[in-house]
Length: 294
Picture 1: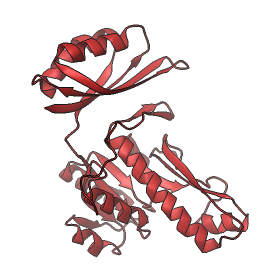
Picture 2: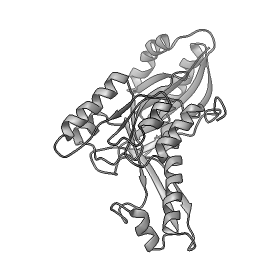
Picture 3: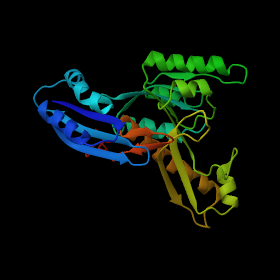
């Protein structure tokens, strides 16, 4: 039985939900989960449906038939096979907490992705990645070779068929050209102290100011540094008794979990770009379950 999700974006008007639901029923499919949002400020409508094809309909026939439904409403839409894992390239520098967390989650089946390559500008995690039978590429980046380095990165992305790049604490700024080429397909993680605590050691600055909340933000990468549409955020509370090193450790924990949740939402097609913001629908029942224990 084919399990799929349908994502739809279009100008808001009467009859959209009825038209979609009728088509799903008429093609012998059963809706198992549905979420929608009508943005009254910009007149845009967003919808995500999970469904099962109970009478043998294929994604190809569903896509072809849906054209007649979509055209009158000006829909942008896509049918996604829920049994297909998303191919991802992970990029990392010298902080490995997010990389290690992702490797573990993928190994136990908690994320519906396949890490097809890891790219780093350092060699620290070559053995870790190799132990997971994942290709590792060390691509050094300098001011002089930045253009050539990004060209090589894009070669890896294209050769592997990757649909998403994850910056798991990759400490290099991507060019405007790369951000535009991969628009909506690069996810980054950073601490949420920006812009209050800029620089190489924001946790030390936070400690010195007596911050009581440590946060992390995961967002899509744009040409505007750390200002892309936000996918996921979270915080952890701090007391006066924590040391500066505690701030770092707690910050790493929240960064790893926030990044994983952002990737989970993207891989399940729950995130819709909405100007400078995002619409993020709740996870479907059962989508957080792991296929196996650690």
